[in-house]
Length: 317
Figure 1 (spheres, rainbow, N blue to C red):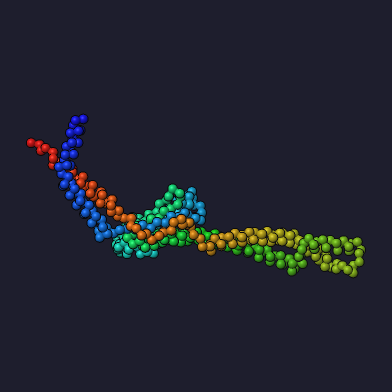
Figure 2 (spheres, helix red, strand yellow; figure 1 turned 180 degrees about the vertical axis):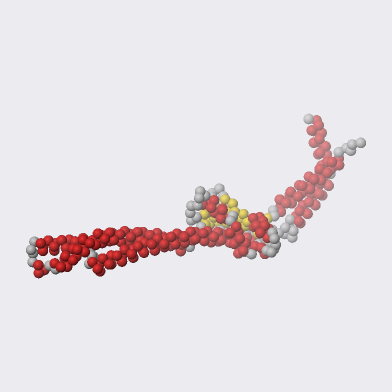
């Protein structure tokens, strides 16, 4: 206990004895850190932030909408578009012809641009840049390119579905035309137009002739001809007539699906609900000079005190 008390007393005496030196070191550290953390040495950076929710992304595997959104934001396709659109190679002063261009470009991109999922299942986009207007421009560019890239993917899927529906319509239309030709032949060459009505009328006319009714009002020849045609081709007429109605129903159903897919293909959709739009920042966020000054002063004083402590130790003989 006494040793600890003695040690504390010794440290206190050492501080009192060298307080002027420690104060001078602290002041020098404050001045130097203030100078070297100024815009002349460290370019200040501004932050533009956007907060968005996913929208209209649909289902993909077992991923939730926010997980899909985060995957897209991290995709090379969106990053390359943002880099190209804002000419970030020139902005970050990276040589496009250099062998390690892609490496340095992505390092700079990831250092200044971050997208994080929030606890509310939204995405927060933060862009740091020495130019406040550029920071907001890049943030908007990320959102715009996200919508464009996802829209292209969805349009390609819709186009595949559209082509599938077109092919279905073509096949059914071909079958309708084929059946229609057969029915046309039955109408023109066999006089079959309405099987039920014609069969009933032929039966009535045929029975009247058998019963000896007035033959002057009945065309026996045509009735017998139609009766013969019905007997030969009536079954075909019923089959194809039923078939044509089924095909027309199927065609109508496919056409509804086609129109739905067409509307998806032609519709201009967005895939983000913007909660907080990117703004041009007015206040820098980096560097925080008071923290740099405080840590520099504390570190310099602490280091000097340690040196004094070692110097004050008795030298071994």
